[in-house]
Amino acid sequence: MHSNKKRIVVLGAGESGTGAAVLAADKGFDVFLSDSGTISAKYRAVLESEGIAFEEGGHTPAKILDADEIIKSPGIPLDAPVVLAARAHSIPIISEIEFAGRYTDAKMVCITGSNGKTTTTMLIHHILTSAGIDAGLAGNVGNSLAYQVARDPHKVYVVELSSFQLDNMYDFKADIAVLMNITPDHLDRYDHVMQNYVNAKFRIIRNMTASDCFIFWKDDPIIGEQLRHIATEARMLPFAEHREEDTAAYIDAENELIFNTPGTSFGMPRADLALSGLHNVFNSMAAGLSACMFDIRKETIRKALGDFHGVEHRLEFTADIDGVRWINDSKATNVNSCWYALEAMTRPTVLILGGKDKGNDYSEILPLVKEKVKAIVAMGKDNAKIVDFFRPYVADIADTHSLDDAIAACRRYAVAGDTVLLSPCCASFDLFKNYEDRGRLFKAAVRAMQA
Figure 1 (cartoon, helix red, strand yellow):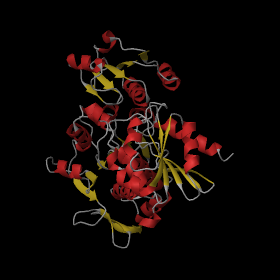
Figure 2 (cartoon, rainbow, N blue to C red; figure 1 turned 180 degrees about the vertical axis):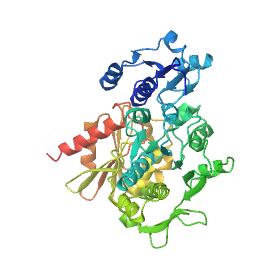
Figure 3 (tube, rainbow, N blue to C red; figure 1 turned 60 degrees about the vertical axis):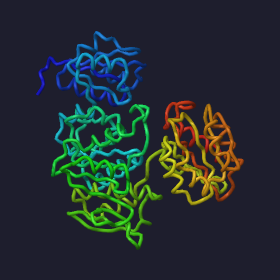
């Protein structure tokens, strides 16, 4: 292994960075953690109790640039000054996932994609634990992978990976890699070049061998195009809406979800799935195929796909008030996520949009808006782009700048039999701390109306 004198510097003291620092300290490294902002009380307490040296409110170059290796938190951009300085000094920069992978032989089920990855990750974890498998939840959900490897080890890890986490992974290997879809997102981090983002997503199949398995959505044109240019030794298990000769999961003419892998073959009625909407059929296919690789009994997979409770802030039913259904889909921070939410709507919909725009092209959702949306409530500091785009197509549009005003506008527009859908298409940073904060405040405001 590594010599004990090796110095590791961790950049960023969130869940990922703090976990990496704990594992590095446990492995005998000289560890220093640096955060440009304020470290939250929860993580400060961990660092102090572990005796890990740290700084906050800025990076001290002298304490960072003597590192043998740097573990960078995924939220720190690749062009941050401290990262550029480390590169100039030829210091290797890795992710927490890469670091954690060195110290565990556990089986890794890794999920990425522009949409659906959290739901799919939670679904896979739910099926595995229902089957009695010792599985940890890590990456963008659950606890830091590095922290679990250090203090709470599992035989299997189900890891949700963003493109940012994949950027600094080199020797790490997934045993099962799941790629849900690829649509434009985070292009501001990739020089506004779509291919750079696609390349980041495809890092999930690095180092895979013939004994590994790659599960992906066959109907995605971007994935299909990329697979024409790159090869993997891994066994390919594509899923799709309709049966083709190589599809491992699909919907048949009787609306049955069919799983057909080398190890098992079975079906279940689409109506029995816990989650509604076509996108959740794909999430269920990806999760079911992953479970098939563990030789889990068909009955267990069927039951788990039918009794899963869903993910907070993802098409989350919040309340039914006077015949109006209120749905929290705050996690829809891009246009494609909103498309999936609208696709699942079966009633006239009042749609709440808005926040920090990431260069959105709203034309993608326009056909569904015309078909299903009776009113739009824009909620953000600057709603001009949304209002201007949709004004020719939607009769009722409200321009609001707070959650309270947005909810009041929804109440004016929605009548019994309607759905109010918070699916904003945008990041939340203009009015809220993050999409979780936006979703929880929305739910609290809705539930307060029942009081």
